[in-house]
Amino acid sequence: MYRIPFPAWACDVTVKPDRGITTPDRAIPHVLVTPKVSADDEGFTEATVDTADMYLVTPGQTPPTSTDRVEVPATHPLHGLYQVEGEPDPWPLGIHVNLRRIHG
Image: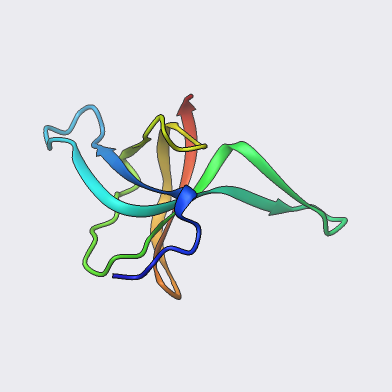
């Protein structure tokens, strides 16, 4: 298992399938959830509270799909319920997932 360098941003999340799907909720342990940072035309960066990045770093973890919601626990700085945006994509240490907050 990869050791996450920022333990305060690591947590276990709950994946909640789309309301019309009867698949039960499932946990994904030991993921990294960080604020999404965007660059504007001036080259400055800005973190937003409405979007986040989730990184799955443990081999074999099944990422959520674009119809899933992800619940980040209250103990995490970015706690809340998020909708997965787009499809998961690879990154050097695992899988990256875009999240957009739907309930804080």
